[in-house]
Image (tube, rainbow, N blue to C red; front, side, top):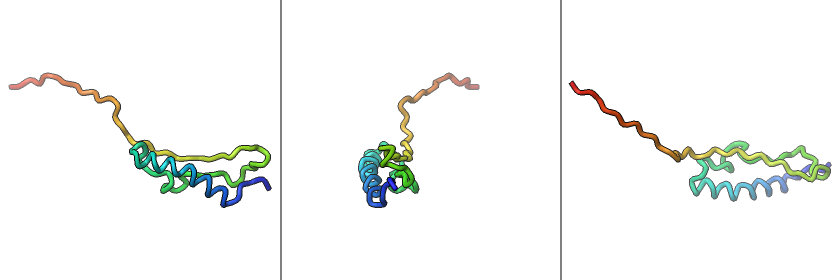
Length: 79
């Protein structure tokens, strides 16, 4: 029918997951997409035989990193 079989889907999820897990270990992501429900989804309904495309959806949760810190300093009145 032109769609991917479960073995192919698992292979694509594994390939994507390897790099993303490394990003998580390096601190670039706050959650590992492999461990998140529906973190990596390969389409089971796309007719790859006709479109020649494999849609893969990946949910990334970035780590909140402050690149700039602004500090306001002022004088307080004493009594």
